[in-house]
Length: 193
Image (cartoon, rainbow, N blue to C red; front, side, top):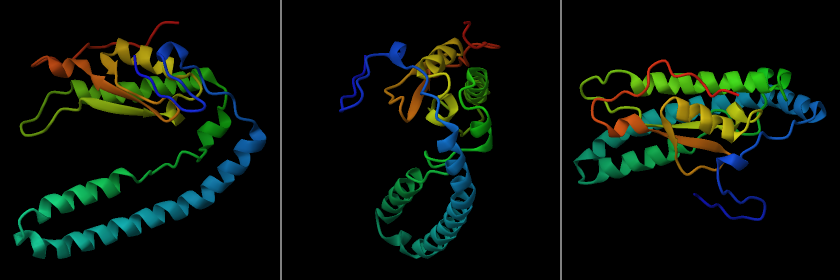
């Protein structure tokens, strides 16, 4: 399968992707309080960055007569926007604080996330739109049940695993996308057990 080598982690398959250890409340409460303060400022900063990008894009319209400028500008914008996290990894939300260690909560969270992605992927295609064929499930969604649960639940819905680092996210690909006109299983449920 895939192998990621570093000092703390070797991946040899989803069967080893267990749930993250339960974090102590003494660590979660300060992170939650910090999230309340910093996240508000972070989102205000993101809104300001978005406004700056719009202004820059308006002025960049002047330079569209230069060959290749528009393509390069789009790549730069995609690179900048692609690296911005709306929810930084260190944040702790109220549901996460309340349900730390609750596998049923995290299982339902994973199922809801996969159901949303499956609904998008299986939706009829509108003319001129590209289908949703890939998705990413972040660690904050599955930390209480582990990556193995995500892979099993996704497979039951028609998704296939892509190279992933379970310490950050699980990347999936909609396998029905390779079959013309196919939309995948209907009414697929999560894994049993």
